[in-house]
Image (cartoon, rainbow, N blue to C red; front, side, top):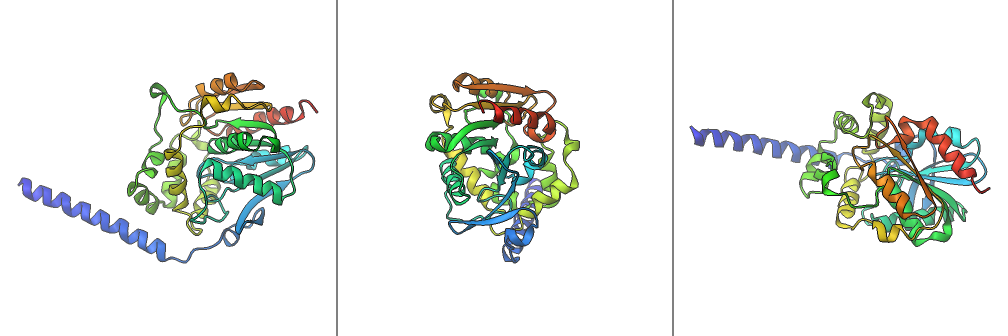
Length: 316
């Protein structure tokens, strides 16, 4: 009886493995489209042979918005219209995400993204700017401030990465954990159907999951149809996992004015990290927002827009 049961389990596992392999193969053979073919909003510009998707609105002091892991310019949709009434606001899809190209040979590290951001600024003829970043995007702009301080006027950190998580506060976001495991990540991405994208967006990113709309899910799901759309997130996640956190020693050397914004109910990066940043960066202040998760600039857009506008005008 036990042998029959084990044989049955073995057959089920084999069927699942074959199904995943066939699904992955079908997706590999399916013709891929460029970001330019997949989206009709914003603009595209060539940066070192990479077609970059970006939004650019308004005039005045420049604010550049940098999204987090597996996100895109879309995360800033509720901020750009309001802030561009007073400033020039630019949001870009980093290489590997959204509708920007996802070349295999790109340096998908915080340092690589940082250097690319400066190259983007050069191409756009921007000498200095205020940089705002959410989550991984916070890590990118922190690295930019450390490596290219002369290009950064001010920093705005929104639920930013930067510190190692303490064991007692760690809450593992399962999709990210699986993406870091060779084999498991490929299986996960091969099953990245629209319903999976929707459920992952409801898996702890927002305080209120009703914030996740069909339009939002469609925008993010559509981006995975681009060349390397299901591979690039694995390359980035594994690089992030293999790299040490930026850490307190380096963060404490940052000298430019810094605004720290955090959702009190963030399930990905604990709210206590807001205080770590505030303690380490001399010219900084932190604002914690109630009833907001990892993306307070979306869930509490009006309030965050006011914070950013006031901060941009300080000292002018």
